Length: 233
Image 1 (cartoon, rainbow, N blue to C red):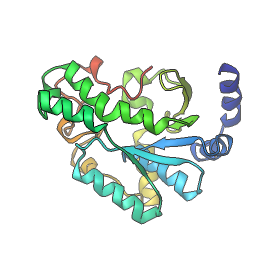
Image 2: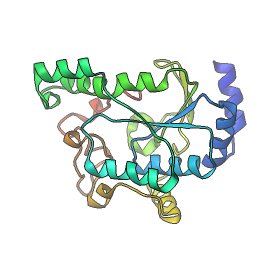
Image 3: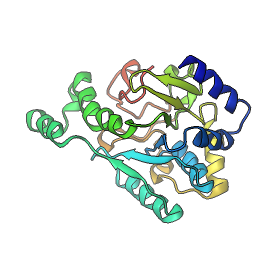
């Protein structure tokens, strides 16, 4: 794995995000996937993939608790690019069991309950989405959290046995916003209402001036516990 990673890193070294995506789409032809939550970062990457008709499959994890505004962005992408976005959903039996035993808002009661909810609604469906693929493209940026500051653009995900590439890892929020404005890319209306990181509706709020970009996610928990399990390092 290490030798191949070095070769891939050399391949994309010095390339723009769009250029690197194009090279990797060819290198992992038919085996590259991009996960979108319809965040601004993900909208940038979707535009790059669609504009160059790259051989990258796009998918989203529909947790069943998303904002109406998020579904609107999803639909706008279909209208704008005429593209296919594969949707993955929680396993019905596990979801029914959790809701029957603990109710719809058990995640507020403990970190363990919240992680259980995230596992059922996100982590398990992700495994199905990644199955059979070799490269997973994400919209992670280093500014999102302290735990992501040390990340490399290309890494090996041991949990899912797949390479991960973060094309916008070193982009600033301004660079993301400027790219969206320049290319007139559809984006979530919640950003204009103070939301900085958008997940499930019950677990996301707008942030206050001076707060961290991730403060609005699982705001009732301590900062060092605020990960859903999709990205483990």
